[in-house]
Amino acid sequence: MSIETTIEEGVAFIKVSGDLDTETGPLLLDAGRQALTDFVNTLRIDLSEVTFMDSSGLNALIGIRNLALARHTLIVDHPSAKVRRIFEVTGLTQAFGITEPGLA
Image (cartoon, rainbow, N blue to C red):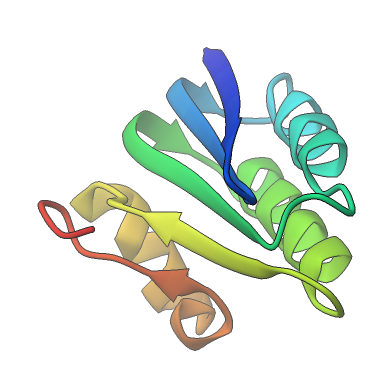
């Protein structure tokens, strides 16, 4: 897995690729925690290149959402069909701002 973080004009972008699981979920949570500064209004997490996500990956995203809730907007960008299905099955689709593949 790889995680790339950039910040531009008050928006933090985290791009995740590979597997998001028990080994890598904590790395994503840490990246989200570091990105949510006073200089960031919105955090966008791009999951378009995530090939697998288990409950640990979902827990990391929930942790980031909880950290962002009071002062930041969180958007999950372009999850693959398999990853999007996890949000649907768990009933968390509405808890996250999720964009469809191909949309910004």
